[in-house]
Length: 318
Image (cartoon, rainbow, N blue to C red; front, side):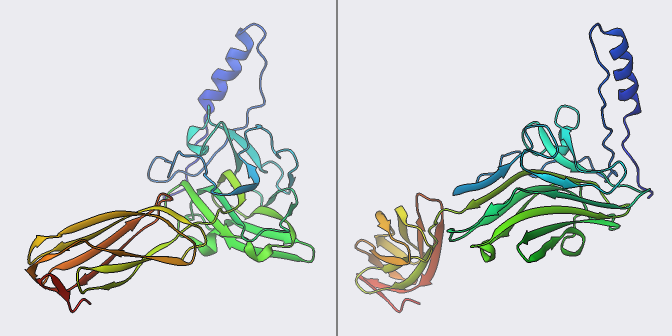
């Protein structure tokens, strides 16, 4: 199927006519943002703004409504189709959140080599750095690609190439996440380079560079028997786990007493563990033992084992 272009001729004609008949109105230099249609109407993966979980180093959502934003720069090579701004009022499908997004049109007449360059970012003193942004495009037209460059003193690293690294069949916004911790101690800029000929248009929104907050990671360790069931909850993350709600449940067999025990452990420090124990168990049979844990920070874990219950004892747990 030949590529189609969404050119809003009627809107332009009506806009020009209204400018002449409305007192005090001025004809705006409205740019028509064309894109090649996919088989479905463009939709958003998420309408939620980016939520960085740590200290913000750089944030840009293009809400100033200008390109480039303050402190940013562009390199323009195409005669007409360079980095620009789209607004949600006119093109709601092309903005992830807020009123504006960055945008570069495809061109089937002239080649493109269009750069959007962030301000310099000093990454000295950080322990971990993450880049997140939202990208709208597809890879159905591989003539042009979007490259992500990390540049600094003596280096220019291409860490992502949309055409080489992705298979995107639908024209939608997607969240992109990159670990920049290898550049700690450097002063860098981040560059989005749209390069090639007759590819697909590209939207960019909700850029965030941040140092993630330490986070817990829960795991269920050894589950053992004896006089009841004991288990270990491990925190293998780099942040404290607080208000850890846990349960030990036995399903199957004939469990008369102690089928479920619940409790709360106030805190499990990073890279530490806590032991938990069921209440009194009485029954007979070979139940499945399930241990769960979930902390206030969000992470959860589950572990399973089987054992033989004989009266008050739980034997052969594995």
